[in-house]
Length: 369
Ligand code: NAP
Ligand code: FE
Image (cartoon, rainbow, N blue to C red):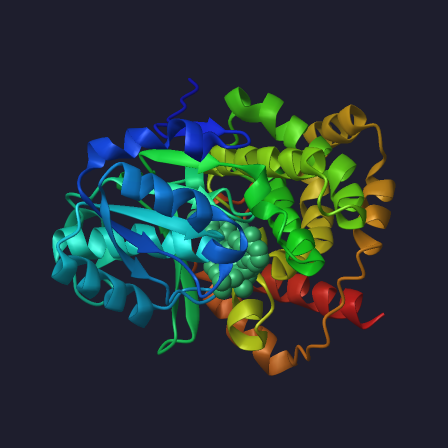
């Protein structure tokens, strides 16, 4: 039996917020805006949103303190402010970090949670309405039930999924991504590519989503380089944003796999962006899974009209070789952490601790040559 659950009302296209933003008036009279330090401004979202709020007579409280890889402390600070300001609904604006933070701020505030209780589904009974406006093309969080939070005390990044986190409405306007610098454009697209590939790796792989999964991979391969060379071209931006949304729709059903779990420690320990961490793990992970998934992966490469070898060459051209030192001690410690992460149950094959160590060794070798 196949199943699919995608409850997010999605508007996609240039000026969609201006045209359809009136629908947020149903959510109340006071919005809580969650964003990072500058992306809401740089992307042009605030230029569209603030006049809209004024026209609809909606007050707002701005919380613009979300950093990359949002922390436990930051989401609690946001939740406190939301409740103090007595807001009716939430608008998350930005990349995955502010939108993920908006989701967790939401459940903390709505259920008066403390500490890490938001990870426990049974403690989460309600949520405020949530609107998402992405300004990167990578995480697909605007259509997923996931939120990833960094726990600085434990030096650990951990995600969770709860259907209550699906935004009520998402507005995806490719023009909001034109201001992205090249490095972030590349890294976020590689994150989206990971989600799409993990949709095939996942033990919960879902035939319903195969058409968009295949299409999403093709869109990234066809549009990422052209977009890096011509960053203001809205056609390329549109195609990358579509691919990112497709990736979100896919992982909302399948979840992510070891490809994501193995990257989290590289972000917390070395500050690698989420997309770059996924990027350097991509080849070793695909090599490990290929013997078990060769039929479907070959089908994918036939559809894109490249060989697996050409795909690896395409990846190599981005030169993702961060200067980090993966010591044997680091690998042993993090392999233990990765083995215990929730995504491990979703891998297509059983991977023991030695398997995780082997993957980290492969990553070490591939970035040192
Ligand atoms: P991000 O961390 O949200 O943002 C990265 C950087 O890009 C920030 O400096 C941000 O600035 C800047 N930026 C964003 N939009 C911009 C724009 N239009 N113009 C110029 N600069 C802009 O990056 P992300 O890759 O989208 O999100 C990564 C996070 O999402 C990670 O924590 C990851 O674990 C999580 N994630 C979640 C899911 C999910 O399903 N929920 C899936 C994958 C990853 P500001 O500092 O001003 O914001
Ligand atoms: Fe991701």
